[in-house]
Length: 215
Image (cartoon, rainbow, N blue to C red):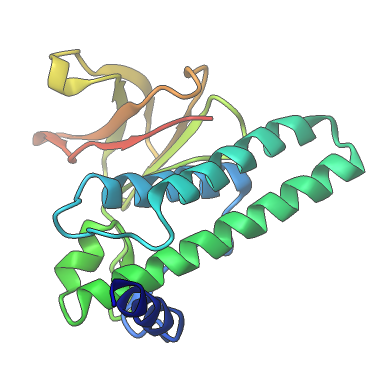
C-alpha cells in the first residue's frame, strides 16, 4: 500500500506545470549553477520537518552536484571529451533541480513561504523586485561578485567574513564609488559572508550580509 502511495506522489510531482516555482538557472555559468544547486539542496536538507521525503533524495542531488564540480575542474584543460562529459553532468544537475523544484511546488501548494524556505523563486514575484544586495559567482575561481542598487552620492565599502556568528570581524575587500565590485583570492570551498556598507555624508548604512561558497 505504501509503495502505491509513493508511486502516485511521484506521478503528481512529475506532472506539475511549475505554477508557482521558478528555478531561474538556465543562464547560469557552471560555477554559479553549482553554488545555486547547493543552496537549494542545503535549504531543503536543513528543513526536514517541512520537506520530509524529497524526490529526488538530497543524496542523489548532492552526488550530481559533486560529479559536475569534478567534471568542471577536469575540463579546465579544454579537452573536447572532458568538456562534453562536463556538459552531460550539467544536464543531469539541471534535471535533478527541476524534479526537486516540482517536489517543492507539490509540498508547498499555495503556501509561498514554503517555496521561499527552499530558496526557490516565485513566478508571481515581479521582475522589478531585484534584491537590494546580491552576491554571485563569476567565472573566475576564488572570486565573488557583489552588487546592490545604486544610490546617488554614495561610496560602497564591500566587506567579507568567514563566520560572523563566531564573532569573526568583517574586513574590507574593496571601496568603490559604483554599486558593484569583485573580491578575489578567496579560499575555494570555504563559506564566506559578504555585506556592503553604504557611506554618505549622513553616515553609514549596512545592508544585511549574504553568504556564498567560492569555487
